[in-house]
Image (cartoon, rainbow over the protein chains, first blue to last red):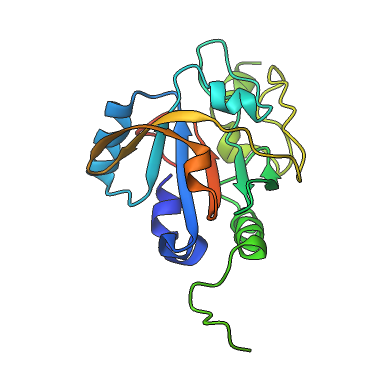
Amino acid sequence: MQAYRDQYASLFKDGRNVVLIGISSDTPEELASWAKDDDFQFLFGSDPGSAGYAAFGGDPRDNGMVGSRAVIVVAPDGTISHVMPTFNQVDPAAYDELSAAIDAVTPDPDDEGGE
Amino acid sequence: MRRWAALGLLTGVLSMAGTTPTAAQENDFLAVGSDAPDIEFTGATRYGVVGDLRLSEYRGETIVLAFFFRARTPG
């Protein structure tokens, strides 16, 4: 998740009109502790058993961990607008794809409605 | 074959783009255009545990769900 932290301004518009949620089967206490130690500025979600991952169609592992490093974009209207079944965090193209997917459904926070 | 075991631990780093991480996983993600399920989770930030949340609370904003394996791992 460090890459998301370091690219938060560019990828996630500094959280303006975009909510990033990192979800794992860790306990909330573990996630909060890690977020504090590594200074993550976004929200984490604790989902023991990975029921949320399964609800989106993922296949959790037998130990309750998520089965893949999936990234899903949900548009402001609540519909799924982009799915990356496996996010390759060392491939710059993955970040370009995610950024484009976010931009496609997110109003520009700096746009005041002009041309 | 031991090399495959080592690679299994590094699939997130070494897998070719578009491949699934392990043959054991049978992911079938919801299609683009589907309504996102209103999943529930316990929120946590660098300031502490923030309690139980659900996805519908963020309607009106773009939501990026980034699933990951384990806290305190690189990536």
